[in-house]
Image (cartoon, rainbow, N blue to C red; front, side, top):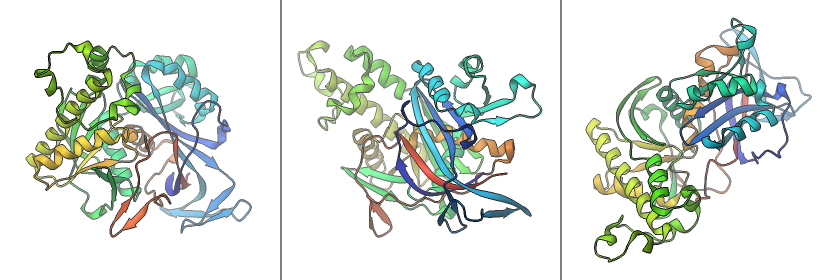
Length: 394
């Protein structure tokens, strides 16, 4: 399946939305992390056909076809969908897959026994932990892909295929950055999940894990819960935690005669978030400097498009580089692993899947200025999002 994107829109991914027919779904992929389960799947829409220039025409016209390796494949129109669930609520993910009729969204492994034919690509530690649960409840077999391979594959795909994927953010200003595909490599990919992995990427399938730290999202959520006594520190991120730009990271506690309970939970959480984000930004730049890398891309659901987090990381990179380097973020930051698993269908030749290029049009809410695109920040950029695309499939 080759994907060419024609735009982006937000669709509801809750359980009440319309279920899709089994023949409309293909290539469901999962990234099951310690904190979140990320899900990507393609849905077919037969109401439009798309020509080789990306123009859509109503259903009923002669079906278009594309040639590849002397073979012709039909072009279809559809969407790549994104969804996420808390790992501790894995049963909600199972119900989502069942209610959306995504059970048929894997591939048919013809050489496997009958009971093992329905295969879903998955990555992350949970792909091993929950394998039996998916098999027992949904009859799905999780075919595990290497986590680092998937992260890099997903990042490369987005950076080369989605024209306005990468952006900078500092002092409340978000600017999309045009990426020269001929000058993309090498770059540093910093994935911030429960822990932090730093990968030097030299090309498709060419990368090396050069550093990392266990002080990441897991530290924030775990230590934050202990310090604030909140059961769900994650809920505070969209509320009072972003009330003020305090750059001290617990520094005031040294000179104040107060106990922990004397501080507001949101202030404690904000200082903890700043400490962790600043540390990640500093370590990331020092590794980029170590290898002479010009670009640093940050991904992972720890960021979630939150202004405070991105601003802290950006300030750290800017400070330690003396303004010579900039932190860059990704619109689909949390789905790198899931997209990489999605792409691995092609690598393993399942069902003749071919995914090569996806060309996206920027949202109409953005404005152009030179070679950059300015846009206002709108919360979690990953929530309930889908990408319209034309595909060809065998």
